[in-house]
Structures are given as C-alpha cells and as structure tokens.
Amino acid sequence: MPVHPTAIVDPRAKIDPTAHIGPFCVIEGEVEIGANCRLLHAVFVTGWTTLGPDCEIHPHVVIGHAPQDIKYQGQRSFCRIGRGCIIRENASIHRGTIPDSETIIGEGCFLLAGAHVGHNCTVGNKVTLINNVLLAGHVAVEDRVTVGGAAAIHQFVRIGELAMVAGAARVRMDIPPFALSDSMGRVAGLNRIGLRRNEYGRDELVALREAYKVLYGGAGGFADRVCALRVMARTPATKKLLRFVEAPSKRGLAGRTRGRAGRATDDSDDAGR
Image 1 (cartoon, rainbow, N blue to C red):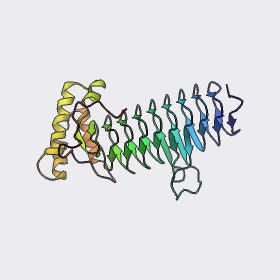
Image 2 (image 1 turned 90 degrees about the vertical axis):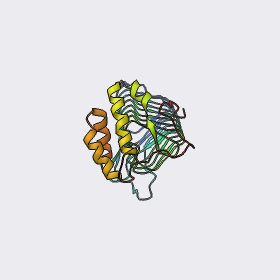
Image 3 (image 1 turned 45 degrees about the horizontal axis):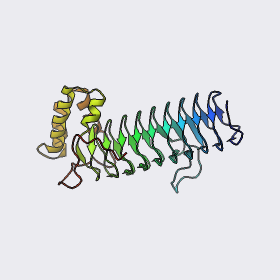
Image 4 (image 1 turned 60 degrees about the vertical axis):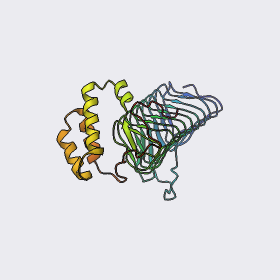
C-alpha cells in the first residue's frame, strides 16, 4: 500500500493494498478504501465512509464529514461512494444526518471542482455534477443526469433519469426523466441530445415527445393529465416517466417554461461547463 510519509491514516481504517494515499492526506475513522483508489494529495476522508474501487480523488476534497445540520449530534451515519468515481478539487460530500442513514454516490460519477453533495442525498450512476453544483440535503438524482455549473438544488428535490439541468439553475421542484430544464428550474423540453447519445431510438423519442405533450399541455387538471399519461405509456421510457410522476414527492413536479426569457431549446447541449 503506497502511503506517502506525510499522510495520516487512522489505524481503524481499512485500505486496500493497491490503493494510493498521496501527500498530506488524512484518513480518519472507520473508513474503507477500495482497490486501485488514488487519493492525490491533501484529501480528507472521515467518518463511516466507503470508497469503492478505482476512484480518483483530487486535492482538497472532503468526503464523509459531519453534515451541515444543527440537529446532528455526532451519531454514526454513512457515506458510500461507488466504483470508478472521479471527484475533483474542493468538492465535498457529507454523511447522513439521521442515525445510521447514508449519503450515496453511485458508480462512474464525475463531480467537478467545488461540487457539494449534502447529507442524505442519493446520486445514481454516471451522474455529472459540473463545477460548483450545490445539492441540498435529501436530494435524489437518478442515473445519467447532468447538472450544469453553479446550479442549486433545493432539499428533497428529485431529478429523473437522463435529465439535464441548466447552468446556474434554481431548482425548487422535481425535474422529470429525460427533461431539459431552464435556469428557473422549469421544464423546457426533452433532452434529445442525451437521449440520442444513450441510444434511444426514434420510436422512444416520438413516444416521449407525445407523453410530454400530454403531461404539460393536455386537457384538464394535473390528475387528469396523469391519467391520460397512464393510458398512453407503453414504451420503457414513457413508463419510467409515469413511475416518476406517480411516485411520492415532497416538492411537486416542475412546471414548463413560460415566456421567452430563459427559454431553452430541445437541442441545447450547454450545461454551463
């Protein structure tokens, strides 16, 4: 196990022999670090944190530190990072605030410099958080989401699979799967480029477009539109959309873009990188 002589490693920590712990790193508490992980230098990992194999952690990252919650009294809680994540400079990920709860980052995620994941967040696989994204506590982000730079996500918000959130967006309500948001956190259209890149075919794209027309432009109130969506949801993607819309929510579903100001197009590929 190549541990730099300036690193401080708690004897309670379990570190795979193939992991690399660079200069001035601090490993504190019952931390587990998987095979082939690389902590470059000045990384702080603490608490009851698990790093999966093949993670690359850049300078001044903080993982598993106490949550920013005045109710937290030091009880055991967890932070779990999946295989193959890249976490860039000055990012921070806090452990859960409720006893024995956890903050979870999935596999293959990319957190750019300054990104923050608050306590009890659940982040899926292959999620990208661009520079300075802020996830408040209890946020749920599904697989293959991209959140644009400096976006701020309210507590308990859900972001559905393959959604793209605009840079500097203020997201206060749930963003459904496959959606493109505007800077106000409203739905501006489909993330068509993301769908094509992930090999969704024409039939799925057409079905999703029709489903979104029903959900955001159909007749009647919200319950009526959900009923109409339930009838027409036949493809895997539209069924995912229906499940998301019908699932319990503490914030409610985001509305659609209004007016010309801040309007995004379906073909936008700019997430504030």
